[in-house]
Image (tube, rainbow, N blue to C red):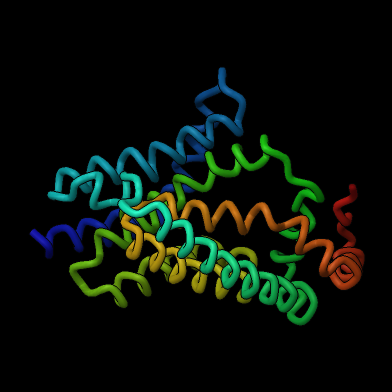
Length: 233
């Protein structure tokens, strides 16, 4: 059963990486009564949450084994998440600077130009709705499903897939995604819940305005050199 689970996880992951974005975009265009952004979100939940969850259950995993549960020890989970968040944000800020200022990668510059200058409660809620499918898929399904291979191989493979999904933004961004993926895998392994990597993911995204302020001069210069607007506010 473990061999079948690993094979199914790898097969669905490969299919997801190669086809799901195009499939999602094609289906979103057919859901015309819905706004495009909402259609994309619903399809992300279908392809990254519902389908992998159903497949995992069919292959013998329980929802709890895929991280769909609350932490057994809230205090320990909170302390671990806070500690990991500090490392996550620090390393990510450094790699954003490398991507934008040192390597001047076009994908990273464009991505940073779209960051908000302020984040409110509505933004955090919306980000959680988009980030949950990523964490449910890469950590809850891929990492937890590949654990029969060993913790380290499962973390590396799931993080490589996560990095490939972010490679459009450049090498430094892909490296950042890989390191974040390893960190998020450790979080779900230690706490047993997908809520831990979700909290880390959302905390990092919510820190974007802080990153912009810390790197304001350098990032603004890079954006101007690329002919892109710098976020105001």
